[in-house]
Amino acid sequence: MIKEVLVVEGKMDVVAIDKAVEADCIITEGFNLKPQALANIAEAYKKRGIIILTDPDAAGERIRTYLTRRFPKAKHAFIPVEDATANDDIGVEQAQPEAIRRALAKVRTLDWEPSHEFSSTDLIVNGLSGSPAAAQRRAQAGALLGIGFANAKTFLKRLNHYGVTRVEFTQALAQLEEENT
Image (cartoon, rainbow, N blue to C red; front, side):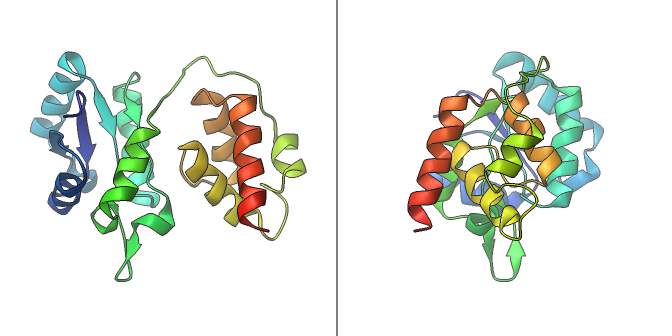
């Protein structure tokens, strides 16, 4: 049983999570976020903590951003886009149990005092920005690091805000190179 309460977007996300792990969930119903849902999230946040697990799409990111502002010490789990895509749909509900377990094993906490460990130069030098394959490499690196897919600016922000170390970054890039050869 996961101690924290998972915050997800829909009922079918809960069905997928139940196949993967034992956890309590709160449904946001997309970006509706009705007062009762927010009250339930706030209560869980105070008592047990929450893990935000939204879909890896634009709507899911908007919900994550909104909830992060309201609940700054929330934990975050990211399912890679390729693991959350099936039947021409993207979402937690499309993910296989193993993908959900992998995402939850790499939970990160947002640090409001970001490190300045990484710069845009790190992204460029490592092919994560400014190259034709950059988006794909960011997606792969984000999956390995547990910070999800993002554009270059958001990826850099996540590197510095989610406590990614230089060692983790280097190891992920080495694994990426190994997988792509």
